[in-house]
Amino acid sequence: MLIDLTGKTALVTGSTQGIGAAIASGLAAAGARVAVNGRRRESVDEAVKRLGEAGGELFAAPGDISTDEGAAAVFRAVPHADILINSLGVFGPRPALEIDDDEWRRFFEMNVLTAIRMTRHYLPGMVERFWGRILNIASDSAVVIPAEMIHYGMSKTALLAVARGFAKEAAGTGVTVNSVIAGPTHTGGVEDFVYELVDRNLPWEEAQREFMRLHRPQSLLRRLIEPEEIANMVVYLSSPFASATTGGALRADGGYVDSILP
Image (cartoon, rainbow, N blue to C red; front, top):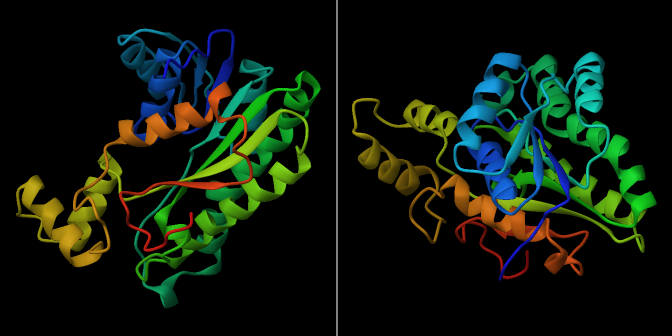
């Protein structure tokens, strides 16, 4: 399947590293002009340079989209988008009864409200052009709420609802809105998370196996997913080939969620 996104402009939020960076790289390789986003200009410029070494057209769109000022800066850098990938997110373990109101708000505002803010801005233009793709990067935690971070699970469940609702708003326009349920994925942040839960003295490969055995035993892959494997799903859903898929929650979870239906 040859995916050609030439002529399309994509914005990937939270794309200086991890899954977001892999998605930006994948979209650029498919021919899209890709805006890389992060809070700091320095990290965004570095990511554009690093990701650009693999080819494709990438440009900087720095701004903290959890704030009105930061979002406005991104809107100026990316006046319109044909493809919007809401991949910005924060996570971290916390005992349920120790999560205070401020932390609940932070997770909702960073993981959910940013996606709503970006969608609200770019969806009308997509509808006017009768073509567009919006994808929220969710998580297996949206379905299998982790006991060690229920605030994160809550935010990812909300993203599924947000995508479904906006898909109804875009019904019949040629614009599709979906979520991708990413399974346990190997990123720098996840390495830190793994070592919070297993012995820090273990070599990485052994630590990963121990983490999957103790904390993610449902995984059928029995390993962490690589960010590029998530990106492959996202690039497909961003393409014309996925024109009949909207309002869905598509799984790239390594079989983690024990369900036949998505």
